[in-house]
Image (cartoon, rainbow, N blue to C red; front, side, top):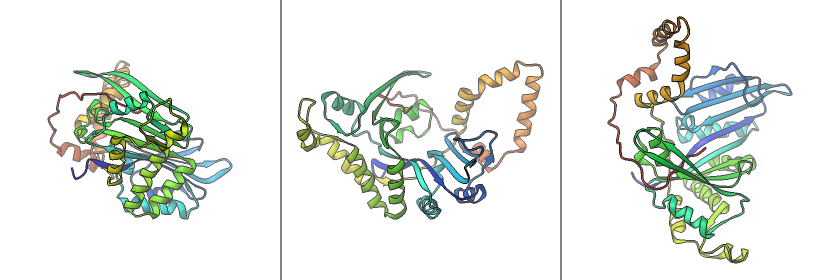
Length: 336
């Protein structure tokens, strides 16, 4: 790994006032299918699914805005684009007089140079300086095959605010979901921008060069939260002027040098089995419990083979990797 710090885009959503599904889907690329239900109040919708995490949704034909298009793209979809393709998409949105409604930027401390426990302790002693009205810690217990984990996420801001920061242990989240490259991650600082902040951030990504945009994102992080050598008892003026704690100064300096990555979300047979077991098994059991259910399921499996695409065939070509059973240590976080 060249650098323990990386920056990536984990969500992208936008609205354009006048387009059509065909033009928009051409810009987005990939395979889109007509959905049976509407999406975010739009009666007509299309969906794109890539792998297990990549989901894109497109909605249109609102009663008073029939030509308006709204699109949501998860990180699994955005990761299939090159940086230039992301910028081309954003410039197209701007040209159409549209705007971003949400963009999530993930700053990853992949070596976990600052453990989640250190951040939580700083919150306890009052070193967190922020304008956000809401700062909270969410802890959840999750039991896995061979060990128990305690997942913790620190939130700075509210779901309704234009900027929400989530801090959690990305490594443990990925290990819990049996993702094979979990060792490559550490603590994630995930900024969710909406409304005006999303528009500003999207415009910056479209026009700034990579280094300037990286500095811009770190600047937004610093404007949202700082960790300073202060306590809850200090007055507001001192809290805002106190020196940064050493670990936060080093962390944000590292983020300034972060590599911008658009990481491919690799699909594996192990991950597919995990998804089927967790999501589909109960309903498959219901179908098999009905008269003729097992025969119907076997027929569907045979039909499924005829619908294979290259991405399905490529799964069979991959050699399964040996899983590592070592549990992750320390505090854990998992985003809601």
